[in-house]
Image 1 (cartoon, rainbow, N blue to C red):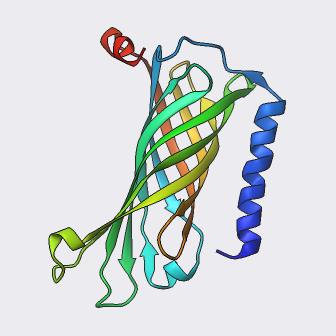
Image 2 (image 1 turned 135 degrees about the horizontal axis):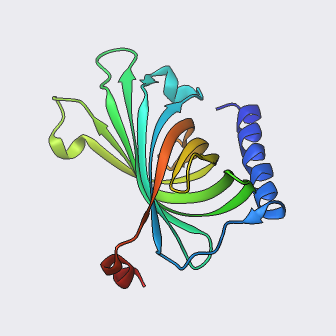
Length: 199
């Protein structure tokens, strides 16, 4: 990723975060773990760097679960993307990012909310290579991701989501990935037994 694009993306997240912090109304307070928000998003890796000279990203999928925390929002989730080799015999691989995150959510207008979160997790690269022993087909690396977006609420429980993500994977040569996301989320009441465990 070029320095100019990287600066633009990080700058955009900074200004969104500052906007969420300085303006709008805080989301109505809930008791921690009272509700769960389930989200499913289509994601697309749109940036290009040396990694993309060798692998072409396909459409991906992200699923996640978020809940009100004592302060902010707590989330867990996973992102899956397939990368196809541009030349053989280099193998295709599947990317799986399993994360936990914490963030903030602000009401911008009656049905529009903005959010920003920091995620940390395990980035798995699962290679499709029959000539490598099974234990050598998976690489596991630390990854940190900054995610932000807006949610348009169609009802009290259902929202459309537009989002962006900037992910840094701590491989030997840092892997930087930027994603656009589009999806839907649904809020549900957390079952009593789960609230008891989490609290």
